[in-house]
Length: 430
Ligand SMILES: Cc1cc2nc3c(=O)[nH]c(=O)nc-3n(C[C@H](O)[C@H](O)[C@H](O)COP(=O)(O)OP(=O)(O)OC[C@H]3O[C@@H](n4cnc5c(N)ncnc54)[C@H](O)[C@@H]3O)c2cc1C
Image 1: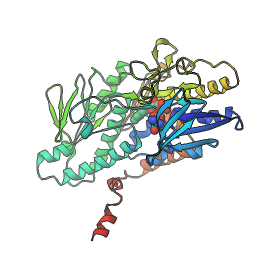
Image 2: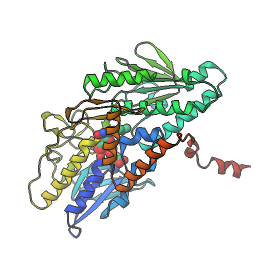
Image 3: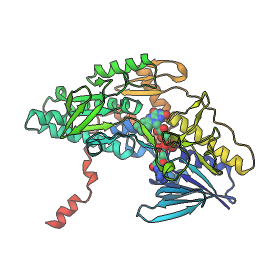
Image 4: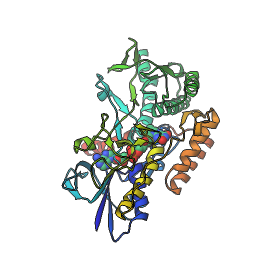
């Protein structure tokens, strides 16, 4: 029996495994997935998790119930040994395990792309994972509480300062949703703090949303500015120290919360394993998604440089839209090769982008048609609801949205979840 190992349980991992379960015979091939979490995260909904519109559990898909024939190993692949046909896995308890394979699919995704900026690693937070989204929601509420009890003005302003760095889709959606959430929450505080709250988007390029047409990006910037969100283009983050954020235009902002949304870099797994990578560390694959020069090794998604069908010198962007199509083709190609049939090239073309600005506003360019305002926001929601895996998750999200329409926002601050043993320790110590 041959072993097919799938690294990662994100878009590539989940969709490849699901299709392989249908395409390869169970007696002849064993499917194994390695993932640090037992669920897939639908990242496009993270901004709405951060703003509390969607319950965190509704945007994750439990892998064990979504996959019927795939053995899930919880852990992280540290290295792939191509010659020995085995993967070194670090299990959650720290023990190593070597897992043999005949065919491997690498879908390890990406990490936040950071820079060596003083104070960044110590004080900022990324926006790529579910824990980060949950933490941010609690953080916003905790900062409002700190500000409402602050003794002096500087302390209050720092607590109410929120700086985001990087105005791509994730950054714009995150700041749009969270500012909306914070403004709604402020209505329940006794002191009028709304005027002191400051939300700032810092972007090194001369515009926001570089993936979109300039007119739509300008529209998005105007809508956000109308809500009081400051947008600083042509500006870079210089340092973060003691609640002071310094920028390249020599200005500084008192802000206790800094969110880094300045792009992604591929998982370092490929480089650590000595596999062929491009200058950005992405696995080099051909149009059929085979890792260049290595039999039986496949890769796609954010971790790979998949040749763009429209521009052979370029590569597909790191989006869910592309990852989803790549995963389906990848599974078909693995099955084809096992059956002795030729694999097919990746042909998908970008169908446009959708961006929510929160507050019932959005911008989008599906199939080249430019849409803005409420219709774009509605399209964004409908599209992602449609693509959310499993019927049960779709229903949960639709219910969460309905509840959010009918009732005031839930403002319970659950930051204590980060320290579940504190209360017990206190009891035991008394
Ligand atoms: C906030 C946010 C919003 C987004 N919004 C959109 C959007 O609106 N539209 C869109 O098209 N795209 C969007 N994206 C991008 C999209 O989510 C990614 O392009 C997509 O998730 C890539 O899929 P992937 O399978 O390559 O990686 P992922 O889905 O990130 O999956 C990678 C998986 O590999 C696991 N893994 C990592 N390292 C290892 C290892 N060493 N061993 C084992 N497992 C490992 C990870 O835990 C994870 O489960 C958004 C991304 C973010 C962060």
